[in-house]
Length: 187
View 1 (spheres, rainbow, N blue to C red):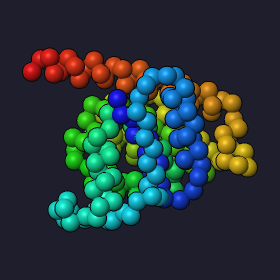
View 2 (view 1 turned 45 degrees about the horizontal axis):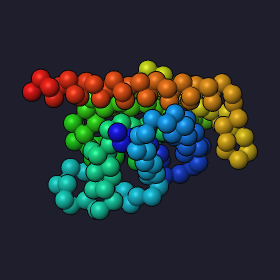
View 3 (view 1 turned 180 degrees about the vertical axis):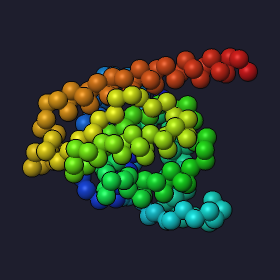
View 4 (view 1 turned 30 degrees about the vertical axis):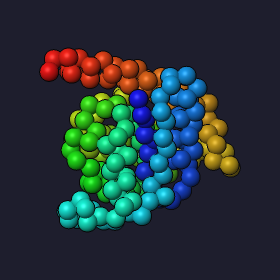
């Protein structure tokens, strides 16, 4: 199973720190999954405007391939101006509607106010529902107060919630293996 860790922003480091923490928890379980981290900051993004796929640059094509090849995802996003970053929405716009279908997804988000957690519920979850992802119910939202001066997570409750997110995510991945096998057996 290939798990794609998506750092869905091109600026800041807190979202990446949360993502790395979740990655360490999943890796620490000995699940044996192939874990790959992609940082949107490492890609040359183009505005998705409906042109044919082959007219986008190689970085955009590579980004799409990464999503298509993954079996599961941990998506990390900051919340800017009460919304997900445009670069993350742009990446979703580039994907085929079946690219993430029936694949497990967990969400971690970071914002400047405690109220911004609602962006996950009102924006990100509906997008993932459109893709028919198997979204875990326990996303984790962090706030600037949860980090120390080196951007390490200093809040014990947040660390415990991230560990629980990792545990539930693995259960969803294992469940999805059986769902996919059953679907293939019926064909």
